[in-house]
Image (cartoon, rainbow, N blue to C red):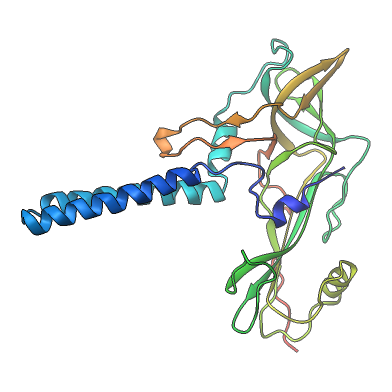
Length: 296
């Protein structure tokens, strides 16, 4: 069993690296101030505003480009696009050590998982995320947390080895997503509970769940999200092909994968270090159930 909870709590977006290096931001900031000084000098001395206006427009375009890439990096859009655009592989022709993408129905291996809150059984991947809403008079538990908005307070994210029956070749493949493997789960969680600041008593089931994890059971603004991939779900995996006698396996690539530049989407390359796992449809509850705790 592979515990991915620490990656979520430390705000590492599934082991993917930022598309915009910090050094590049420093250089762009320096160039901006130099260009601003030159354009202001020309505006004052020559009294020609054309260069100044052009510089401001160019700076706005560059800033919009950087913001666009940062937001898409946080939402993992580039990795989702890479997963969808990468062609499906033919395992009958694929060679040892080749990067492959396969899609098929998932089957549990020797170890199956159970979701934390809804108790969904026979899962190959399960995640439960608890968010708290900050406000006036509250101090975030960590420096990088905000006093306003939703902050991730607790995370359970687990993955295990499982099987996929490739839909193209019919081959049964072992996906080594268990202990020691870096996994990038492109599986969104569904909101199943959201409390309000006015509620005075949480439901007994939610209070029990919180106490079992040594979390405060006092009434406050909470949001609980859960996602899972059960046996029989259609799963897509990108990883390295390995053959061991008659056993076909998909393992974590030994080297970092780059999504490459996606100019039609105006996206910079994103480096990925791990096994990519996605689903053909939304994982988790069939319907997103939202429970609002009652006021007492």
